[in-house]
Image (cartoon, rainbow, N blue to C red; front, side, top):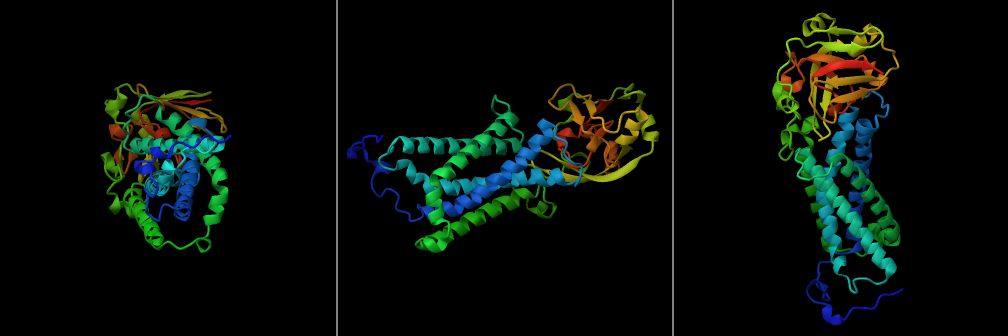
Length: 375
């Protein structure tokens, strides 16, 4: 069904003929930028799902490589940051279509435009909330992680529908040799690529060590903080600024026991080099010293294939209680750490004891550990 054409008298301002004279508002430029934007979106989606699977689905991921989460989550934030200038350039290229005449050319065209509106809205909200999350500012009433997760699926679904609707146009403009040359196109695409590279370079240093000197726009420097490491949640925020004089670590299993800090320090100590990697995208390598978690579990008679529940002294929070699959709990690099970088843990880093394990998100490296329990 075709919708009647609106009166020509309404064609004023951006609706008038020739309102957008730039030759870059054309399909080839849009397709070229769209390829970069689509690749960044796919990388961001896949790496985001990996993080979600680790934090919320508790899938039994392997504990190696030790830098696995550092790489995937760093790539997630890097690709999300790169999408911001790419999306701006893409929208600039195609925004005259918002003022196409007639506005709606039929039911299918109307549905297509509604789908594009949903796609653009989802991607914009996804990028804006993700960027604000990177600086740990939450000026909204809805839960960030759940909203971020479902917006990603809406954006992915909207992209697939958009690609299907525009497949003939994309195919016709995929190869440069098939379309007429536009003198300004190459310079514009170079500028977009340069801007994207610059934005990426000055933020990626929070997770890429050799770019650390360029972290001009990154919300965190991973070498600044107590004992040379950043802190997301302080002891004051967690209500754990002081350790009770009678504090003891409880380990529950067939042979339960409890140890105070002096008794823990008297046990055989191991030192490992492992990164601490945060969902906000920053990561830093550190030297940790403590007791192998497997030694404590063996002493309590906890089965080798058992999941371990870790409870913090933290008063409240989504990760006050976490569960650790046997692949992590039994890894020889996983420690109940008492020291970091040669110093006793500062309160903000989890004094008196914290978990450190390879290939785990920072929120699951539980601080202020109070209890271990085999499930």
